[in-house]
Amino acid sequence: MLNTSKTLISVSKSQQFARFFSIVPRLQSTASSLFSKEQFRQRENVGRIEKIEIRYLGTPKDTTLIMNQGLSTPHDCAKHIGEKYCRLSALALLDNHTPWDMRRPLEESCTLQLLNFTSPEPHLANKAFWRTCSFLLGAVLQKSFKEEAGLFLHSFPKPNIKTGSFVHDIALSKSGWKPTVQELRALSIEMIKLCQQELPIERLDVSSELAQQMFSNNPYKREQIPSISSQNNGLVTVYRVGDHVDISKGPMISSTNLVGKCTIAAVHEVPKANADKLSLYRVQGVALPVGLNINHFAFGVLEDRARKMNPAKLPNEPYDEAVAEQVA
Image 1 (cartoon, one colour):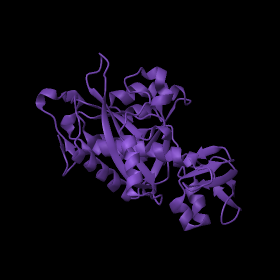
Image 2 (cartoon, rainbow, N blue to C red):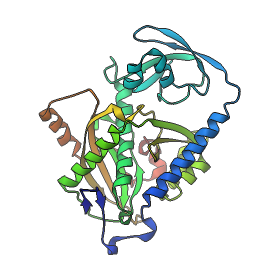
Image 3 (cartoon, one colour):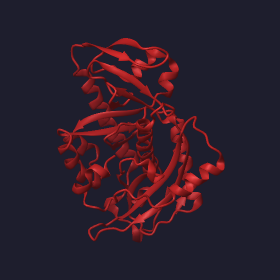
Image 4 (cartoon, rainbow, N blue to C red):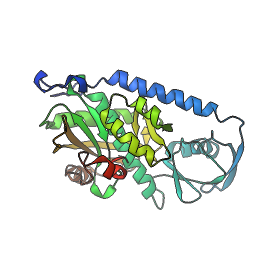
């Protein structure tokens, strides 16, 4: 059962698979350490710093910024425009068509727009928000389970706001897990606590070999990496929040402080294939961007909708055929 005081799950020894035990502290510190080393190496390899011209389009006025190629990010540009733009911008849009992470280095001269959740056309920011919620849910789940649960993060499907829920699919050594209302509430609290830390969300493109090292103890990630890298010029895009690292195509929002009201609404067990030794679960939630408030009744309607099984592709479907759907 999940201990609501620490949001931990334990299972009986008869349900344990020792080689599938989750070893959260070591796994996360190792992946995060490799992330930091590769991030430093890439910055050092920039070499001679070239200047690029960034034409900012938006309020308070259009302006031109001279930034450092391969080092400066949209977040750095926002610092020149005003403090509130650093705090409230969720996503950047380059040359009026390319969504770009706020903390991803800019590669060439371009026009730049800063997007938030109240923009006239917020669909790009909303998709990034939904994807980020799935990513953060994975961080919460990774932290919240005891080692004996044998937890592995599997993947999360690309965001579809119309489904009414964000999703993270996981594997556990325990079958038939049906969390109580208190357990779901405890997970919701952990998600809110994570977001209140105001952590930056960082992106990095790494080689397939380095990705295999980062996820060396996760058989699902190792299986996915070849297909992902083959569709991305041999690279795998990973994201980090705190010490948590996971695979995603992105883009994501710039910081956890942009996530407001949040509920982990439901867990559905997924029928497993004959070869599966672990049980698969789809964990679902709903959230609002910070500053977008609705009354309790209206949010309750959203919570009820988020409890229904999300129809996105399931984790037990053949990975090679569903790679575009399984990795958001």
